[in-house]
Image (tube, rainbow, N blue to C red):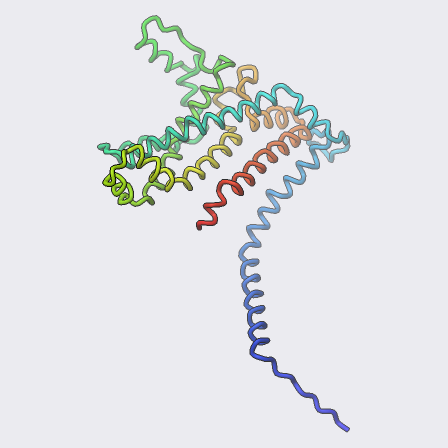
Length: 318
């Protein structure tokens, strides 16, 4: 006796579920195909080097051949007890604090002046103030070495001597107590234009009618700025704070060239310059890897914490 086989037809609900799963699978495959090249590069050039640095930091290794001398966490102990690294850490945090308290307010003030103030020739001032950011860091360092360093000409001393009677020349880059502040002044000259442009872009997104309405209601310029302009500019301000902090920690080229490898007597060392000088140039790649791991940990903790606690509202709004 033959047995008939019957195919059970799916219900409309089951068919809809099948179609939904198929669309989800197609979407996941589509996303994977487009993200695979970028994720491959990220894994190859970011994640693997990070894991290798963490591995090499546990060895006394000069970079030649495979690491064999396992020393556990001695590189980290030596690093944290090294007075020059402590100086580099303090200098990096000093640049960060000065950037947040001086550079960004200066950039915001100039953005308000050029973007909202009644200033003639706004396009000219906007271009002139942005020009320093166009220069590369090496060119900027060479220019300011000529301005500040006695060996390069000390143009600033010459100008001040022509204006101030009995002016005594100052070794702007030779004083270990003030060199970090001179470095910050050069960094401000170069980067405040970038932040100014970001603030001006944010100001263009604020309707001028809101500010005019507040003035009509009797608000002073300070009240308009405090309760209307700055709150609406909040997302841009938070972004510039994020970029400024990371830039302060990652600064290398300008500091290295301007201060002649972190001088005088390592007084202007930053974390990045310390890593290069005491890790790479001295062929102490295991020690340098430990510096890199600490450097990475500092920036990672700040980045994740800042984005989660401060910039989360901006992501939610978008």
